Image (cartoon, rainbow, N blue to C red; front, side):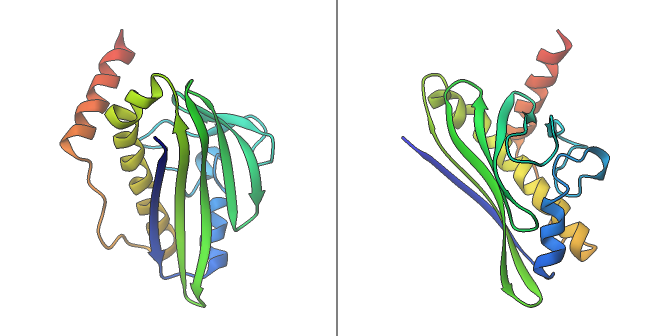
Length: 166
């Protein structure tokens, strides 16, 4: 069983404007793409450079490849059983429109084969839609149709908060 999960948003913005968002990933308060206000912040030990290690929440990875303003790929190192990558890509459609795409491709092993469809997928999907909302707001100044968390995502987040309190 493999996982291939894609989220994308067509933005009325130049490639350079959308690409600039990718270049801020993991830059803390200056990050213009990652939805760190509502989700665990992304942190990388050496910033956005190949070989840098980090992650968000329980998800750990290294920067496997990076083309400024165009593409960044992260290879999973944790949780155990996540074998694959996730990446952001900036794809110009024409001079004034750009597609921002996030792709996750992996082969879950062991417990990850259960945990991905049960919990991680739902949280991942909600986080990515929040990230695309953030990108849209950054480059267009508004969000045409804001993503909404499903009741199941709200339930999972409540369980995580309960566990964190213990």
